[in-house]
Amino acid sequence: MKKRSARIGPAAFTAAFAFLACMAVGCGNDEGASQPGQALEARVRLPDYPYVQNDAIRIEPRLLDGLARDFLAGGGQVDEVPSFLFSFVPIRVFDGITRGRLDRLEEDEGLLYLSGFFGGVWLRKALHFRPSATQSLLLSDPAPGAAMAPLSPAPPTALSAGTRAFSFLTAFAAELNEAAREGNSAAIQEVLLNSLDTLLFLYGYNLGYLESILERPPEGVESPPGYLSCTHFLDCRTPVQGISELERLLTLIDGLADPPDSRWALMKEKVDRLGPPSRQAGYGIWNGFLSTEHMLPDDYFTLLDLSAGFLVYCQVLVLSAMDAWVYEDEEAGRVSLAVGAGMSAWIGGYGIGLISGDSEGRLPQIEARGLSTAP
Image 1 (tube, rainbow, N blue to C red):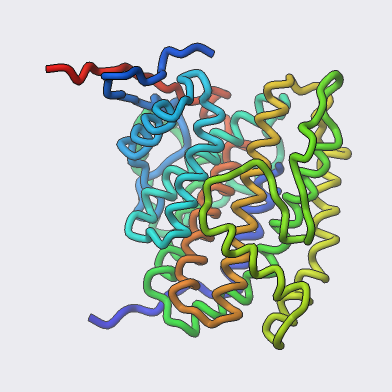
Image 2: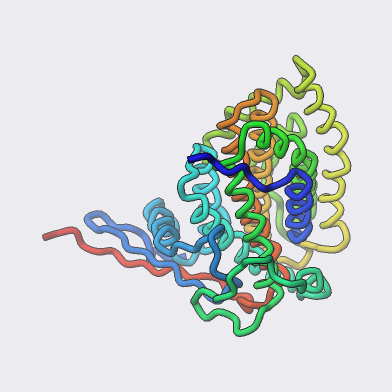
């Protein structure tokens, strides 16, 4: 069967990713511990969230429950929902995608959407942020062809701003999914090159964003020493671990520092041109519009980890795109586009969580019990 060529165009990719980036303004007890001789059963209960039936971003509760079981088995607690949902879930999902797992991309995007959405909900509540005129940007008609039958639990009865934004997000994710799986080599190369400016700006924005947070802890709180270490614009390290492909990608920094050919020279030019202004833009967000000054200490450290994760995923996305474009590697290009699809679901969910009132500030809950394996 002849493969269809991907419909997504470079301009559409760049514009849509820029829109998603702008949406993201931040653009116990041992009850659940696994005991010897017991198998662990976990379930994640989700409050309301914006969702419409679609073929691009699918919610699979079984996968989320499985990740919760792994989280608890590794020492996580049932009351550590932010750590689970904002760090553990995206790390595991992005690691799988960067390893080339494209057969369940839609379900992985569902996990990332939930992680991003409730991350936005959490930040909105932590900062006492009220959705405002930002919603007006999202009140246009839903994406053509998007089915409007909502998915439980407790779907909204009317099309909220979050639901409309989700419809746009699914249309964009569908194009990226198709490009990752079915795009020809030339189309993949073109999309990668034309998206790099936006991706570099997104990375730089989040680098400045994290730097500013580290410099402005709440009164009486000290930022963790050595939390962020950078030897190059794209060679930044944080405590976030778990994406195995990152270490290989970081070896590409040598090509940016001393370009061996014209393709690497172009990459260096983009970094030199976009790095400083994007970094400054992110830094300025926490120097005026938003403030960590009155955050609770636990919320501050959660924000650090969420932001560090965001930086790492952007880092993987930028470096993987450079890697695939410079070496004209079709399979690496498909993986990079898949990472971009996952990032779009995460960023889009984050932005929707910030502007949407669907969840009323509530986060999911983890329920667990140990089942005896004795006969």
